[in-house]
Amino acid sequence: QVQLVESGGGLVQTGGSLRLSCAASGRTFSRDAMGWFRQTPAKEREFVAAISSRGITISYADSVKGRFTISRDNSKNMVYLQMNSLKPEDTAVYYCAADSDGNFGPSIRTLIQYDYWGQGTQVTVSS
Image (cartoon, rainbow, N blue to C red; front, side):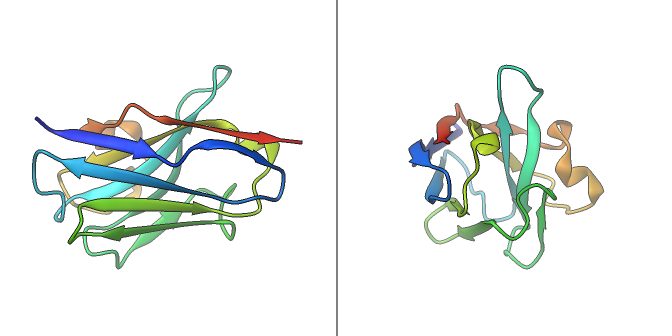
């Protein structure tokens, strides 16, 4: 059974930091591109960051560039999202996703590119 399980969410004050983790199991993810998305009740799910299969190519949404860092450890089937200088507008449910194509074109920022999704972890940034 393929699973992506996010953890590390929580409540933090403005300017604080959190590190999200995504544990992948059920298949080999080392060839997959991996992404993080987020969603609030008022907005559609949006792209946050993505990383290529070997971690060489990375893409960020403009809203998080310079504050968030995506990384992966293929030996552990893990993907991470380090979030610094958090703002109230970063409040959302954060989802981990896997793209089994492994390609890293412009479509890596789109939901339809991804085959597997986690259940999400809540991040709340208080002002």
